[in-house]
Amino acid sequence: MSALLEARGVVKRFGGLTAVDQVDISVGEGEIVGLIGPNGSGKTTLFDCLSRVSDIDAGSISFDGADITGHRPHQVARLGMARTFQLIRVYRQLTVSENMELSIQWGRLGVSGMFSRTDPDTRRRVASLLEFLLLARLRHEPAGALSGGQRRLLEIGMALMSEPKLVLLDEATSGVNPTLTADIADRLREVNRADGVAFLLVEHNVPFVADLCERVVVLNQGAKLAEGTPRRIMQNEAVVEAYFGADAEDAR
Amino acid sequence: MSRGAATGSLDGTEAKRRHLRRAGWAVSWAAVVLLAGLPLLPSVTNATLFTLTLMLTSVGVAVNWNLTGGFTGYVDFGHAVWFGIGAYTTAILMSLQSNGPQIGWSPIPAIGLGALVAGLLAAVIGRATMRLKGPYFSIAMLGTFVAMREIVRVTSITGGGVGLTLPPYLNRPLFYYIQLGLVVALVAFTWWLRRTRFGAGLVAIREDEIGAEMRGIDTTRFKVGIFSFAGLSTGLFGGLWAYQNTFVDPDIAFVEVRTIDAVMGAMLGGLGTVAGPVVGAGALFWLREILWTNLLDYHLVAQGVLLIVIVLFMPRGLVGLVDRRGISITALWGRGRGRKTIPDQQEDEP
Image 1 (cartoon, each protein chain N blue to C red):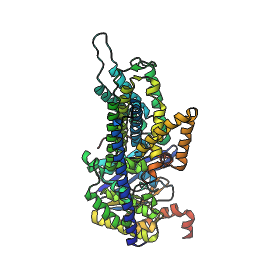
Image 2 (cartoon, rainbow over the protein chains, first blue to last red):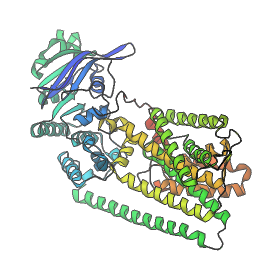
Image 3 (cartoon, each protein chain N blue to C red):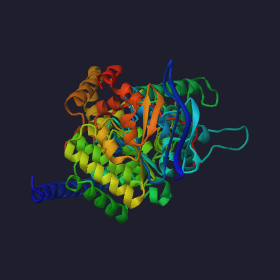
Image 4 (cartoon, rainbow over the protein chains, first blue to last red):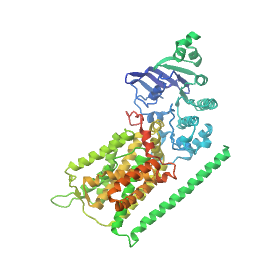
């Protein structure tokens, strides 16, 4: 499997604190990879670096064969990388439909497309995705009026609207009830199978990761601690210690 | 709630919106017809037409301010700088003199170039200041305004503190109709723009700039583009004003109240709406005329009290009472705080 996203030796510092320390990570085409680690291990910071929301202090990042180390986020998005955020970022004052319509692949629009209204094809795609994400009946509601779980789903829908090759999902199940979590897993699996979209998930919900991912990367204190299949990762002593402390090992 | 009930309620909301839209159109057309017919009334004097022209200038500047302040969420406290630049460029070009033949420009190219200079300077200055967020941007623009006024005051080509006199051309009805046509065209343009993807992208930037950037919107290009257009358009109003006023000096061309009026007009009418700045700036203009007449010593105090009342009790303005797409100034600044800055290493597509 060729690497769609490849980051080598990524370093991100905030003053004296090294939040991401020489991390290598890759995601293959159509692959679902999990990124886990205790609180403060640098997962979201790494996401910010990969999606170019934050600059990096060292290392390199390539996506779909292009070096994106010096890119701005909109350029990365136009290459086919979409993401969601730990703190949900939707356009609260706009309706659910408007949020979706604004998440198109902007790179394909010419000047006339930019200065025209949303076309019927985009409207149909919005309607179909909202149906798929169980949000169709809320399409005229302002995004700010949605519940946390519904906003998570909307953010996932916005990421999928751009027909991405890779989606970075930052805690997609945080604050979401178990039924909706299972729905999200089903939807992601379906998109992955049908459209070949790759996913990189930051998650605290370990069963969700184990269920969905083919490979898991573990971060601890900004550095990569382990990498492997979910089963091997669950049995990795260093990972267990990082999550639960040395006492957990003794207790076993 | 059943699906049927939800759909029924949505249909009701949509029908209400449709009625409101129709009422809005009817009121707009009636206002345009009324304003177009006014000069034909025998009781309307040239002085009244001049006052109405000034009101239209105020409305035009507020509509332009709303493009960056209301739609894009960048509250500009120095917007009057583009008015001053348009006015001064027009004045310099029209008052050019030599020892031999008259070399002053005729008004149309002079006003046009004035607008262009304002737009180009807005592109250059916007590129630098629009990296800043919230109150930082507002203060930077206020600084730009003050600095530009002082530059004009000490430069010889601008006539320094003495100012410049333009050749007079007193045809109040003509100026009135030109100004009315420009304002109607500008409002129609704003209405159209808001419905395009570009216009919706501006609102996305206001709502969440990092989110918009991460979803493929080139936020720098969008912001600087609309800021430059607003500068150009306000520069055009500045040039027209200079020609009508036949005189410019730094203290009347670069006056803070012009920005305050634009901000207050947009706030009173409804930030981020198409009709808001038109309603608000028009209402504010007449309100101030009334205050000026009846409370000469306290009219600025009364204006300040009005500003506080709007912020506290009517944050979405008059149009915001019926149009949910408006936004309050407190919400705009609240969103500005704590925003991260997008890295800005490379502007062009790879």
